[in-house]
Amino acid sequence: MASALCLRLSSTFAGGLSARCLLNSRVQRTQFLHMGRTAFGAHDAAFEAAKERLNTLKEEPDNNVKLQIYALFKQATKGPCNTPKPGAFDFVGRAKWQAWSGLGDISQDEAQKQYIDIINGLAGEESPAETEQAGEEASSYKEIKVTKENKVCSILLNRPAKKNAITWLMYNEIVQALDDASKDDSVTVAVITGAGDYYCSGNDLGNFMNIDPKDMPKMARDGKELLRRFVTAFIDFPKPLIGAVNGPAVGVSVTVLGLFDAVYATDKATFHTPFTELGQSAEGCSSYVFPKLMGNTKANEMLLFNKKLTAHEACERGLVTEVLPHDSFQKEVQTRVEYVAQLPPQSVREGKKLVRDQEREDLHKANEKECEVLEGRWLSEECVRAIMSFFTKKARL
Ligand SMILES: CCCCCC/C=C/C(=O)SCCNC(=O)CCNC(=O)[C@H](O)C(C)(C)COP(=O)(O)OP(=O)(O)OC[C@H]1O[C@@H](n2cnc3c(N)ncnc32)[C@H](O)[C@@H]1OP(=O)(O)O
Image (cartoon, rainbow, N blue to C red):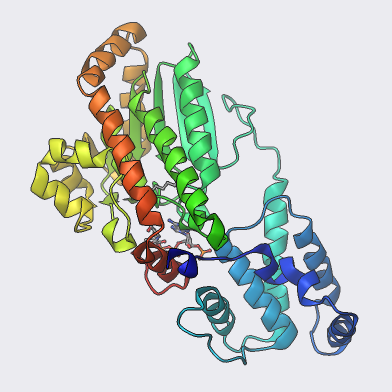
């Protein structure tokens, strides 16, 4: 069943990405060019250029961006959606249909313009202007930004347009940044925070898209291994690790906070672990840490029954150290981090090790177990349906 429900938004599906496939006969190409001259509108040359540009992108866009591109391509070349809605189990067909019909009756000219804007935006992101500043690492990180200054390593989750959802690349980059900070003698403390209005919206649900049904078990195995490595990096990080939760936090970004040494939250932050709504299960050692922090019933309220906590509630439950006013958040956090940064580093490390060693083994066991259970969840119909609902915009938190 899992494979039958599996999602596949391949590159041959995404509008302009598939321009060659969509127009793969000479007759079609001739019709297309003819339409281009007569029916499309003011942006024909730029539209053609954008199609070409899309084919040269080094990285495939996210699946929901692909859906948008697909829909705009159809609208630009065919006009408003005029095909019947695909059947209930044709998830991909329905997602495509919904994206196209969601454009309503915007003109072909307007669709062309939006298509061009999206692709130019994507191409621009791949060759960003040089923005290196003092203290910023000349690094290859793409989805996080790492700065080191005055003994503090700051790791910024940097996908604000996607609420800092964590892609597979981003998991790897965070592991890399933590590993680097743990080995760098100039760093005595690390801080994680988010760009934009969110701290982090958790796992990027697109991580589970674009998978051929036959590759689902491998995807689940790889996901399990990546998650295990990711959480291990938090369990074993040897220096003080501080969370600066600048806005709402969701999923795995909440659970791993239980492995931080201090968590400061703005009064606008919320904490939400909607695992069962997503057909998934607890991770980040939360099945072990949350009951210890807040007791079983309060932990269940979050991990099983999806209760979203305010910053003050999270503080009462021991997940947050201190709630700070939103307007002075950065400054207040900085004061606290600077204080920790100048403490004798070996003394702090030894102290942290003493505390962590009390439960290190249990944490690793909890991590292993949680990853195993999740591997099975990702292959379940419940999980696949929940993710599909998100991308067809039927269900958002
Ligand atoms: C190796 C794998 C390890 C997996 C570990 C297991 C981890 C589990 C979890 O973390 S479970 C939690 C997963 N997260 C969610 O379910 C959150 C989903 N997002 C939402 O419900 C909403 O986006 C929101 C409440 C976070 C914010 O809502 P709103 O303010 O209305 O903004 P938008 O919904 O318009 O979002 C803007 C933009 O961001 C995209 N986006 C946001 N969150 C995610 C996400 N988690 N995955 C993928 N994309 C996300 C959203 O699609 C919008 O994109 P668009 O503008 O439409 O292109």
